[in-house]
Length: 92
Image (cartoon, rainbow, N blue to C red; front, side, top):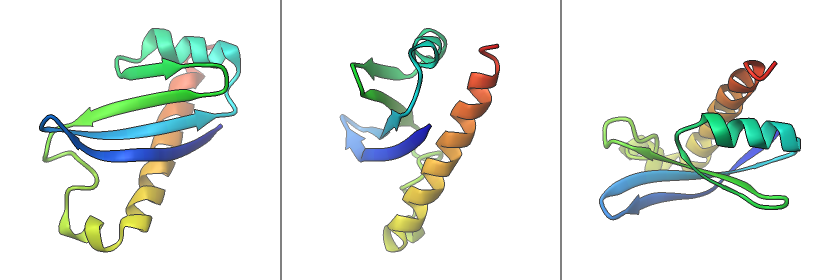
C-alpha cells in the first residue's frame, strides 16, 4: 500500500486532508469503503480518502507546519499508512 497526500486545506470552514491510496486489492478497497466513515471515492486505480478535522486536530494548522510542510506531509502519510494497515488487519 502506498499513501500520498494529494490535497489539503480548508473548504467551507472545514479543514481537510485528501489521501490517494494505491496498491490495494479489490477486497481491501471494498472493506475500507464499507467500514470507514470518511468520504471515499473509489474508481479503477484510484482510492481517494478525504478526512475532515477540527481546528485543534488539523495536522497542517500550526505555524511550524507552515515552515516545515514537507516534514508534516511525510509524517501524515506515514500515520495514515499505519492507521489503514491496522484497520485492514481486522479484515481477516
